[in-house]
Image (tube, rainbow, N blue to C red; front, top):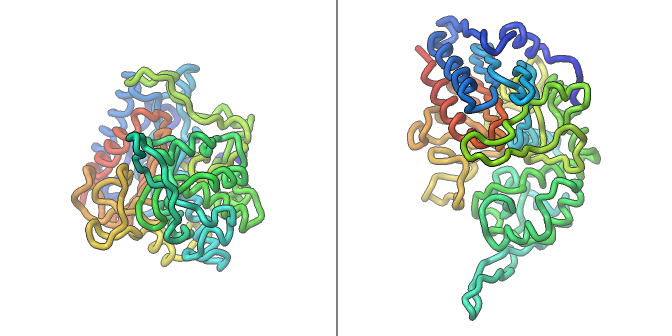
Length: 423
C-alpha cells in the first residue's frame, strides 16, 4: 500500500528540484562527476521535452551513497499540463522483477526455499509439464508436438529465465499461440488462477537449456504467496517496502495519491499509435511479480543502494553480501563454452550474462554502451531503467512513461552518465 507521507529522499529532491525548468547540478569534483557535463545532460532532456519527444522524466545519479544529481523535468501529465514532481509515481513494469527476486532470495536465506528445488514442490500444478516442439505435418502445416520435459524447472531456473516458460505477448510461436488461446497473460485473474492456466500450456523450451524472457517472475510471485501464506503485496510490504522505507511502492496508487501518477502521451510521437499503460488507479486482481509495481525514483534508489551496499542500507539488512554477489553474478555461462542458449531475443544484449533477476556485465567491450564488468541492470517496458555499477560505486535511476522511446533513452542515459565521470 502506498502511503501519503513523502520519503525523506523525495523531500530532499523536492527542495533541490522545485521547478522542472530551473533544475541545476552542483556536483563538486570530489564526486567524480563533471557538473558541466551533468548540466548539459539535463539541458538535453529539457530540450527533448520542449520538442515533444517525451512528456518528462525524473532521474537520479548517486555515487558512494550520496546523490550527485537529481533532475525533475517536463510534465507528469502533458495533457493536463501537470508538471513533473520529484515524487511522481511511475509504472515500473519489469523493474518489479529484481524486487521479487530479492524477496525469493530472502526466503532462501531463511531456509524456506532451495534454489535447486523443483518448482512443483511449492506449486504442484506445474508438475509433469510437457514441451512444445514445432513440426510440419504431411500437408506442410506447422503443428505442435508435445514431448516430456527432460527435467522439472527449478527455482533457480525461474530466477534466471531458463524455466522453459515464455510470454504470449512477445514474438510468435505455436506455444505462444496457446498462451493467447488460454489467456495466460490476462490481468483480470489472481496469481492462483494464473498458475492454473499456465499449467495447461506446454513449455517453449526444455527447462535449464535456454534463456527466454518469460512469466518466470510471475511464477515466483505465486510461489512466494504459497510459501508465505500471504498475498504478494502484503509479503513485499512486510519484507522489503516497509524495512527500506519505500513508501510509494506497491501494486496500485490509492485515490489520495493519484495526483502523482506519471502519464504517457496519448499517442506515441514516433509511431503515432495510441499508448496504453496498465491501470494503477485500482487494486489489481493480478499482483504481477513480473511487471505490476509502481514506484518513485526516491524509492527505487533505496532499493538499488541496498544492493550496492551488499544487502543493507541505513542499518537495515535484507540480504548478506555473499547472496547479493551470487545474485549479480552470471548464471548462464560464457557464450560457446558449455553455456545455456540465449534464444532469439536475448534482452540483456551483447556483453551481458544474466544472474538471478538482473542482466550482469561480463566484459568491458562488446556491449554498445559503456560500463564496468559486474555492473547489473534492468528496465521496464513503460520507460523506466536502472543500473548499479559496483566498481564505480554508482547507482543510476531513470523514470519516464514513454514506452516507444525507452530503448533510445536507456542507451543515452547510460552513455551520458559515464561520459560525465571524471578522475
